[in-house]
Amino acid sequence: MQTLPLLSRPGFRKLALAGAMAAALSAASMAVHAQAVPSAAAAPAATSSPQAQALHAQIDERAKAIEQKLIAWRRDIHQHPELGNLETRTAALVADHLRKLGMEVKTGVAVTGVVGLLKGGKSGPVVALRADMDALPVKEQVDLPFASKAKGMYLGKEVDVMHACGHDTHTAMLMATAEVLAGMKDQLPGSVKFIFQPAEESPANFEPDGEKIWGARQMVKEGVMANPKVDAVFGLHVSSSYPAGWIAWRPGPAMSSADQFWIDVTGKQTHGARPWSGIDPIVASAQIITGIQSIISRQSNIALEPAVVTVGAINGGNRMNIIPDKVSMIGTIRTYDEGMKKDIHKRLATTAEHIAESSGAKARVKVVELYNAVVNPPDLVAKMGPTLERVAGPGNFGVQPKSSASEDFSFYQQEAPGMFFYLGVTPKDKDPNTAPNNHSPLFYADESALIYGVRALSNMAVDYMLASQRS
Image 1 (tube, rainbow, N blue to C red):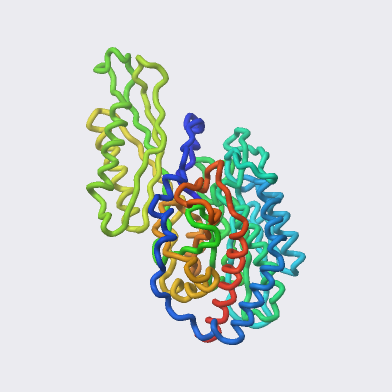
Image 2 (cartoon, rainbow, N blue to C red; image 1 turned 60 degrees about the vertical axis):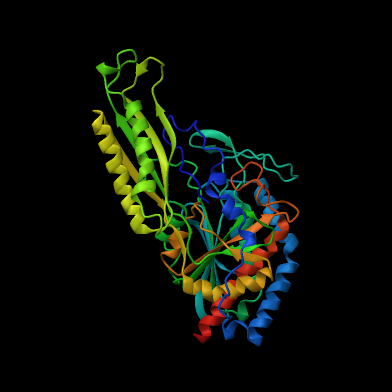
């Protein structure tokens, strides 16, 4: 899950954006379990028929039978985390498992991705289920017997590596889902494509001026949603913001887009005691940062959708009495509406350039669109909501508020209707409002929640197929 932009330019790499997930997931989202889901549409007749009930019972039975295997996979992957596009060990584990289940398996998709195709015994739609496999450059501080001691190379430096965002649980849950559904393939009215994706958090060797294609976007580019064409795609993300086993979802815009921007402000170097002899890019940059805030507070219609523009790092100068030639800054833009996003991009450039010009400096603005907003189609949510309610159980689900975190699951949603939801992993005796967030070195996932994820993904695939039979 992307939370804040990569600090990838030389000079910025040493500046970590600590507490990124804490900023992305607000206190309001952490208290979501107190909210109730509005009355969901009644389950389609096809998903409440005797055939459906038999399949649901079989899913529950099969999931329970492999729960310990599920937990073992999760612990193994957690102990051996790998950064984006370097997930070779994880990919090999996944590919070997899918082959043993008798699936058609493709490896090396989008560098290290794995895709398995399970063909059901009856004709029907193709449902895709997605899990991300990559870890983060974080040193684990959780006292676990399977805690990560791994190292990796990130932006040219050796770093500690940890599954601080829970992608180890995603991979293990989808491996278990694959085993559950493979055991029922003769009864499935359709096919399931299992997408194990690398680099959701971006590649370990991200180049700021290189091609901005990785993870889900690259998998789509390489045809993962075609041959056979995917009719619907589902995915989940674990979150410390909810108690273990809690399921939350939202129709419409659910997670924000993530855009990265650079602003280079060029002035004229001079002695700090004689500022009038040069052009001070530091003062101009300070005025630009202040001016940028008015884009949201005074120029954007936040009654339509919220938006955020944040400068996360600034670098310029190296001595107390020298005014430098140049200052560089980097930041993020978060939006939920495509029109607002494009408008903010234009206003960012106009604001920076004109403020710099007013002091005799020059500003160069570059914006890179990283991830689009995750938008759950309301009709698909109405169709699948009853499935998640049944899996979660009474009083164990709720509405997900909009999150300013971002997810490249959005690229799959551009190719087929897709629904993304959250699964709580905070122990039920702990307060989700104070639990360490995703991306924290103290992030902890209660493994009792994982079977809920397996049941949710399995039931969504089956129920979508059954409903499509009757539609």
